[in-house]
Length: 238
Image 1: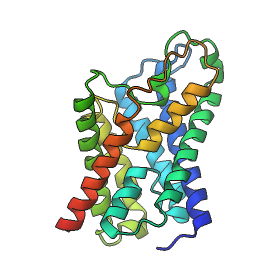
Image 2: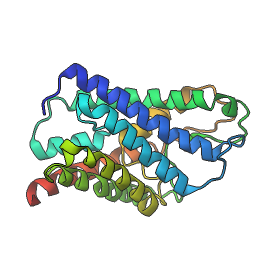
Image 3: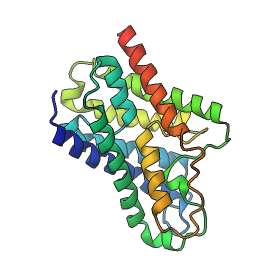
């Protein structure tokens, strides 16, 4: 399906903003001291992000196809050879990710106001063990675990028209979080990590701690490498 430039931009901004609103929102709910959901755990976070994908992709779908992830956009371009609209998709995704992070901050504004601990983990990923090579490999593999199935789902007749494809992708993201998210927090989406990290650096959050720019390249490079590999494998095998 061919989408107009305006619809692509608007769809990706809105869809990615919804994704991050849900995702950063659930991380805030589990992390912040005065949240009713405090310490409710990793399973809650995994499902919160999965529902964020569900809501964001369904909303953006009619306008842009609902990529809401530069890794998906790049993998499709590698497979098809069509790169013309990739910058527009990524621009919309980055703006949407930053907007979603700001919205999540506003939802939990009072809780952030009495914050007494670092908050980067609400916005972006932090490795459990800091080993750049291992962290990069984790992000590459986890992204391939997302993008290869997403590409393959497109070959299954009827999934796209029925909307079932988006539902399956949402559950796939939950599964990735539960199975592969332990080492790095499963960015698997450059915009999802970088946009909110920029917002974290700019927001006036008390005692927020560092934005950890030394690590920031890993959740960008890893998913993009995984996307390129996924596109090449899919193009060769299917």
